Amino acid sequence: YVASECASGLQLAGIETGVPVSFGVLTVENVEQAEARIDKAAEAARGALEMADLFARLRATAKA
Image 1: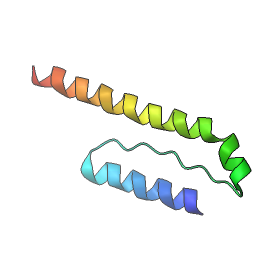
Image 2 (image 1 turned 90 degrees about the vertical axis):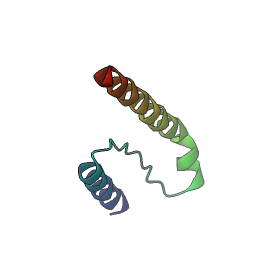
Image 3 (image 1 turned 30 degrees about the horizontal axis):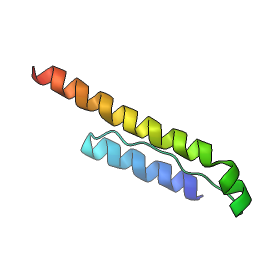
Image 4 (image 1 turned 120 degrees about the vertical axis):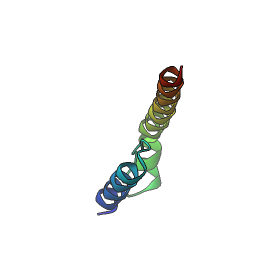
């Protein structure tokens, strides 16, 4: 339920603002699962940063 509501809210935020939104929610039941999935969290963060950089470069190119 949490992941679904997060996805819905972020999608709505992206649609309403026109700002790209990255989504990375880990659903875990304990610390061990969280630790085992930390690489996925890092991957999601890297993806968000790469996307932000790409959009900034595209906007700069469009203004030129």
